[in-house]
Length: 186
Image 1 (spheres, rainbow, N blue to C red):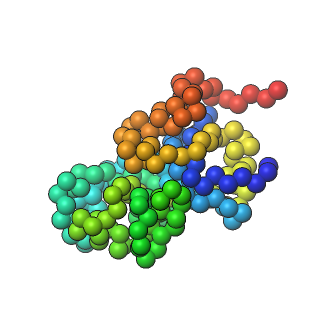
Image 2: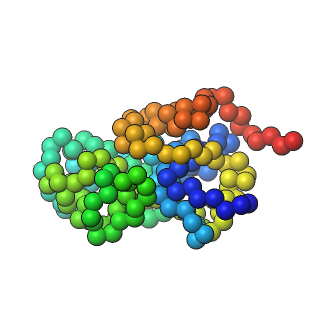
Image 3: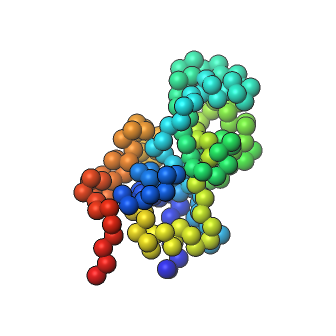
């Protein structure tokens, strides 16, 4: 398969996806190059909110309105580690610039700033991430496991978790319910 860069794109799991980690998921690709790909699942909350997370990592959460904000399942890799997708980028100890002022940060300093009310304007927090080895994502695309569409910051940061998958499908002009469970071949 020809080389493609899906950085700052959404991956929409096709209905035939049986992998429990990715069935019915919307994943945002933060980095895609010849070494592989890294992304975070956007539409799966876990049973943890900011209040509980900040207590677990021993960071004061001084902004009361953030206490109930959900933490999400980002993917099956390093599920004990936090990943903060945010806008604007800012200057943090360990960040990966994605696109359009969006960055993915893994250092604790961003959460300390959030706890003080000094963090980025928009953020999305996950435990874990989705990763693909070199050529693996391209192979899965060739197997019709995913649909792709350019990402929008509004869908990441403003759309409710429950409607993100449908909203991404709308970007393609497709209703998820109309997709077949099996790929056809001519």
